[in-house]
Image (cartoon, rainbow, N blue to C red; front, side, top):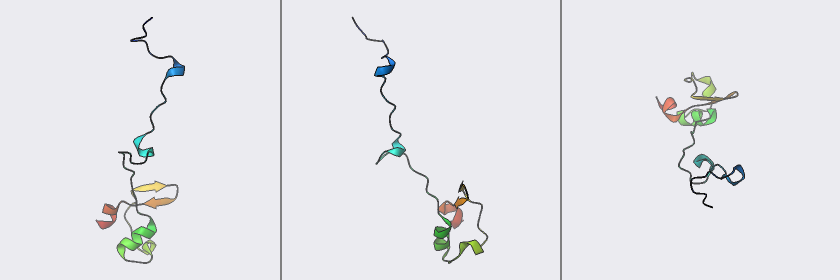
Amino acid sequence: MSTTGTPPSSSQQPSSPTPAACTPGGNEMTARYLSLKEVAKRLGVTNAVAYRLPKPDALIESTRGWKPKTIDA
């Protein structure tokens, strides 16, 4: 009996591959944002909060993040 062209049963389905971003050396790049402390260091100041900063590029709950090019502009 030939099984060519017959899809495997659900118990034989291969598991879905792990996304490249989750594997060491994967091809996907993780976005990197600067923290408030890193922004201050990049600007050469001790307290970036005292300055009028551009709108953050990322917001995770109450944590703001900026792309380096946003700060450098």
